[in-house]
Length: 344
Image 1: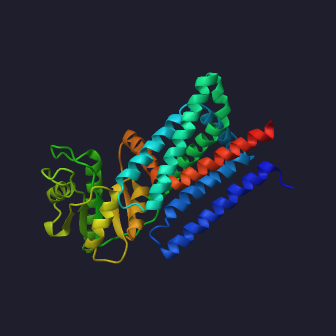
Image 2: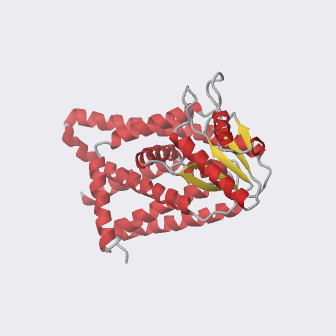
Image 3: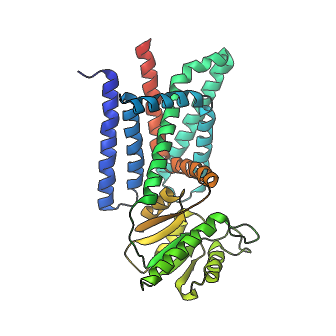
């Protein structure tokens, strides 16, 4: 006979299995709105919860308490994080004109729920003093643990994608742009991407394989050269023939990079996409959404740049999958309240 905790833990294992199976199914049927990378990340998250909640091995025991302690320390900032999450969801919902109206409606519901819950927390503390935060401690600890688990999952999947086996040669290479300053100076991040693309191109040439490099990126200011134009100039300076460089100068974000580059592709085989090592998951997400089959290469960056930008990418991914995160956080909140009722 399973205890209540073991039953809950079994649910996490079952959920992880379902999500992994769904990732395989979506790889087979390739529907643009059903993302295998999303199922994998949240499958790993569910698996982490299951292992850390009930694992008996010493390393797992130690990591579990790291989760609990980290969650307790993060409790103080969770209300502010939730407000940031709500603000980012609202910004994306208002800005994205192509988003389905149901997703927009759900986005407004999420924002309203988060604001109401946060204001209720502040009101309780205002009435009863700082110790009243203890009423919300278990809820915030579970949300904190969920965010830690999703972040670890995100990092693990991102690293796996970086070292995942790839085809040796590609006839087409796409380089994703990075915003260029007003003086037209290429950032170290963009130079690193372009240098990796040059290396891949020359490796193809050494094997007598002809390839094209598509550089994609526009400009918010029509008076300023586009990212693609500046990137093309860099490639020319590196000795890449002009006829092997294709400029895509309209894209203003990662989704548009693939949306506009897709029409420039001549091969139905996988193309090589060169981006930064911290940007692999979102690149895959939008390539899949636009029906572009890709292999990914991640250009290196400094440790500080990698860490800072990985956190930014993680937050962006949370917003992309906001419905899943909202449902999970609400479910964990309900579960933590139920646990309190069981205790008292």
